[in-house]
Length: 437
Image 1 (cartoon, rainbow, N blue to C red):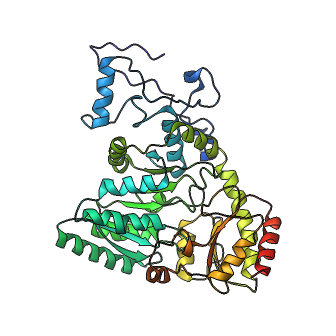
Image 2 (image 1 turned 90 degrees about the horizontal axis):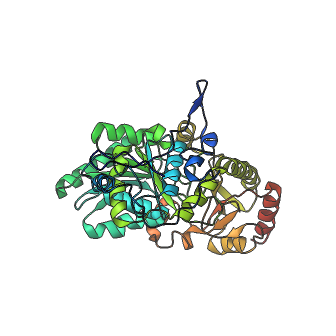
Image 3 (image 1 turned 45 degrees about the vertical axis):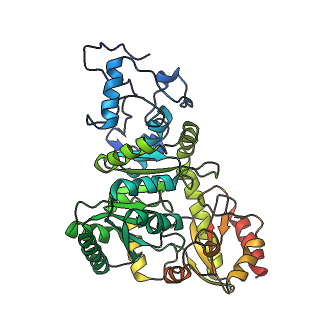
């Protein structure tokens, strides 16, 4: 039980686990090691080796003074946030342990968990964008992200300027200048630079370092946020290249079993705390059971992603030379020198999600998809099973055709997320499906 608090004294924070040891004999511990206990002490939960699921809506305060101090932190009257558990719309044990471990993977100071990746993205953007502001973003984005900026935020006076994923420093400078002028004319500011790399579904990479340098030169107080779902947390660490906030659909690789929906952001406290305040108001925090499942998944994320990445390399080696395949959007076989340069500087692996261009169009892609037997026809990615979909008619159906053509989301593009099955079995499945095209 927590120690008693004297109401006449400043309350002490809720008893929490001691900070996890991050090194042994001067050797920094890897995230895969820290995941096995970081942020949790069995002593505080009856000796349970794994954290229990805390299914409660509210938490008892050790004293009235402690309750007051917690709310002073939550409402912003005092810096530092809540020093204990208050109410499950704000925090909870499972969510706090999860957020501690998510921060470890990206080398971040803090992290927040959400009920979905889009909840994380929407609350993030709403935190920083006000009427008459401009958001600069790379393209393409996940259709729901792009739609939220173009269709929803626009209703509240927020506009956007975008640039292609592979833009150079000079091109990014020009876009930022255009955005700054547009914001000044409207009486607003450039609220955020929002990136997605690799882009969904083309796998085009953004030069985060070039974006950082351009931002630092023109608008140093504007945050750079990036959706790192396709490669994180194992194959890319955008905070190392100058991004301020990294966002995830935890549904994908981190969850990794196609059995939950969740999202997160991570970064320095100066960027995370304002988002936390809006999440506290709106809700949208991940539920305790999903947080517990994610704690389970984080312990094996490295193993699963490594296996999936090895499988993808073998599958793509087969697909690259197939007569019915027109091309591949796979980071292991980059043909463009600019994209290869970004990959070499930013990426630690090619990932396991890629696009394959079937010779023909929608009909040929549908024939291929309908004849798959091992791979499942579904629109998610990053799970233990292999998934395939047709973005132009599914996830990106709402994107206008002119923009889809501009972004390379063509009718002959199939997106594939390779799982952890046997690679030779997957190759055999793709081979027989292509025979039907």
